[in-house]
Image (tube, rainbow, N blue to C red; front, side, top):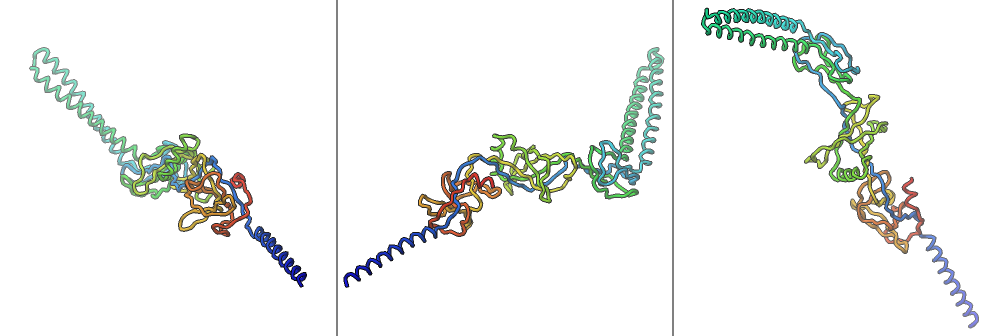
Length: 371
């Protein structure tokens, strides 16, 4: 009887040992295998996009400076023109008549002035011979001076008439492209009437607003590398403009309402693709030194805060909050909360919970940055 009892105890012991071994094996198999990367610092460039308004370097409204009828239209909408090229002609018969009248008055006054000059010479001779008193000469000289003053006034009237006549021929102020022409030939126009606009789009300006924080980051960046003044342009259809631009100026003051400051970049436009009034996005590059970068897939949000799972020495995960400085492509740049050397789960964070143990699969950060 004792012999059988010993056999039963031995079998029970072996069963328990086997179950324990099997339990440990199952526990190891139950650990989630997750990719884990070690945080490092690296120098990188941060690209930010800003909505921009595109304007021609020169864009001028062409307006009438005299009244009349639109007599001639020498150009068409969208046509390229050269500086000084004739654009419009306004009826000029009235202004030619005014000029002729002014010239006639000038000629008459010149003749009167010559007569007054001859009279002054004759009186001077008589005064010198003491035939007449000196006061007579003073009277004659006064008349001569008045005649010469009238000549100057008449010359001013002629110049004014010539200027008005010249305003009837409207020419391009610079090389550019004609905009819409709202009026047709024969239209009655008055001084100040808009005839068209001329745009010089061989180069264009792109204006965009930058926050104070981003402005300071950019300023520090260009002090280290002037190359960062170069920007790129994304067109309204999402394609990249082929020519890079250059930041030229930054306004002197921040806007009180928005806390932003305006930048102006210039882009070459040799093909004329960019038009005055177009829109797009400017990409601004800012260098970031010794940045801690984490993959976007490693981050999850909770109550408007950003978290990652940090892996400790025993491979247990713990939620940790961090503050991002910026986001680019599929990564975050860390401002605070995480340090180089810490290990984080870089993918699959939705399927784990705080405090569990995992089986880490090492993934170098360099390989993530190359993706």
